[in-house]
Image (cartoon, rainbow, N blue to C red; front, side, top):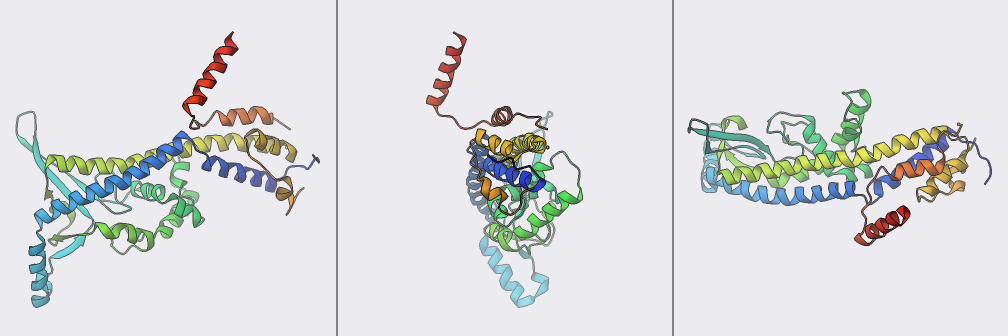
Length: 319
């Protein structure tokens, strides 16, 4: 192989190619993320059916219809029916240490950017969920849906703000308290609007439900949080691999070392493709050793037979 010297462009090409492979590998962390997203869909379906029952029990459709008729007849004085996708649900089946009945209530938002902690106010949690849920769609639009996971330990900064805003805009997010979202956000939210009676905010119209119903709503909201957690764990494994990859590629003086690393990782790289548009530092990491290190940073799904074989080889090595 010709001794083509490394430069920034070649390092970036190699890095991006290998990072893309890391993201598409079938690992335990990625599988947990995908399963968490599937569970969100199931929980949304169940929680929404339950919400319809609870809300219509409080605001019967026939009453809603009558009030709309009055609005047409008398105008704004009777404008008390509206559609909403977030609700305060409450039950009174618990008792405190003195045996007195206590009210348990929380805010549940069915919107794509709905809060995950029971608050009716905006927070990053809703965006983290939205970005994790629509990750592939955002990647296809050249956005970075992993920005929160990548910047998990960092405070707000221009880099983070830029990509968060791009993702939010791509999903059609406008304002947490408005119902004028566009695109995917509007499509996602549409099925979850229900008719409610009243002119006040969510906080003052707590809707009664049973304890079992309330706990089902909590289970749905926990499922949303689980998606965020599993997305974070998966991206953490990719980031750790990429951190080591950057160190190694920065140290390599020749392109052949980078290609050797890719080969050791099972990644096929076409040298001609890498240097087609452009070509023209001390080797700290041996490519073979670095490949082994990176491989050890992920838990690929392994069949039962493969695990048994690996155990046999280990026991044989001890003899």
